[in-house]
Amino acid sequence: MQAVNTEASYGSLARAFHWLTALLILTVFPLGLYAENLPYANSEELAFKAQMFSIHKTLGIATFFVALARILWALSQKHPAPLHPERRLETFAAEAVHYALYLALIIVPLSGWIGHAATSGFAPILWPFGDDLPLVPKSPLVEAVAAGVHVTAIWVLAAALFLHIAGALKHALIDRDATLARMVSGVKAGTPAPGHSSQLAKLAALAVYLLVIGYAWQLAQQPEAAPSALAEAGSEAGAEAQPAPPAATTGSAASESAANWQVESGTLGFTVQQMGAAVQGSFPDWSAEILFNETADASGEYGRVTVEINTATLVLGSVSDQAKGADFFNTASFPVAIFTAPIKAADEGYIAEGVLQLRGTEKPVSLPFTLEISGDTAVMKGEAVLDRRDFGMGESYQDEASVGFSVIVTTGLTAKRKD
Image (cartoon, rainbow, N blue to C red; front, side, top):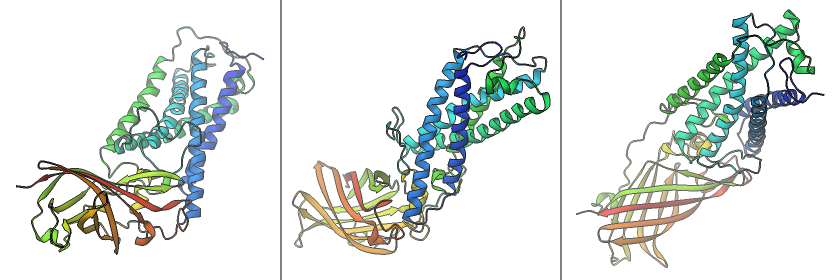
């Protein structure tokens, strides 16, 4: 059995790569569609959906490496001559589709891998590579572009695959030539055509995917039109962003009196366990009114703080939309969360012991924090642990196999003393 290609036939190794790749594509593609349309109304359904996506992603990575090996082998081999070089348009179309498939086998799984690495949460990859990639940051923009390329390139792949199969059937059933037989059994057929070149077909295939990448980039700049980052979690693509809620007032002492510190920069994040892995989220839009003095008053308080959080700006990797839904933060009905607390001394630094209004529920919350003041600049870092069940979140997820009960909230800010 001949392992290498000739000008008239495919070798056994090229044919093995072809059929292995075909098997992977015909498994990964429908599995992804199946997983995307699975429900996730409770912990059991979510766990099964995540398992299906994990298998989809894992097989996708396998497809990437098989395709890479196949392409490297093809580059080292002769490409059998077309059987009908005189049919120039048909030959050009067949070669363009062929090269489009080659590019798809790299671009589709790689863009999915990059999008997975750029976000966090939901359905880990089962290969031992980890869920991150070198040089790929955790970035909503990177994830959005990669997701756009992935989704769009999948449909280019589907179209190219359809044309490829249709062409093979035409050769077998209508032309009755050896085109399909060369790939099935290694039959020798065809002779080199003088002056034949496939460079234009390669450029055409490349142009298609440059358009795909450009289209994905444009979508990423328009969040309302971009494919949803939750495509893998079964949400609808292109969901409109929640509008920013109006500013809320609490009537606290801090809001009634003039705050004497102005926040210049800061972060408000949290970590929750999902499918046994830590997933990090954040609230990009929040504000704080801070009244703080270095000496305590007669009641032992150093001041008060009121924090208003725009929950509609929640970012939680690939499950941001799910987290904003009615079962969790329910941002449509409760777009603002408010934490109000007096500031007192603690064993190590200070503690804000107050009330958190979240999702229509008020619960006591304690936030220990450290504070370093240098002149008129203060740097604060704090951490608190909440239980999502206290606020009625994820009531259909009654165990921690899918979503953990504890949520670690971390915050840090730099503030300037007002004049």
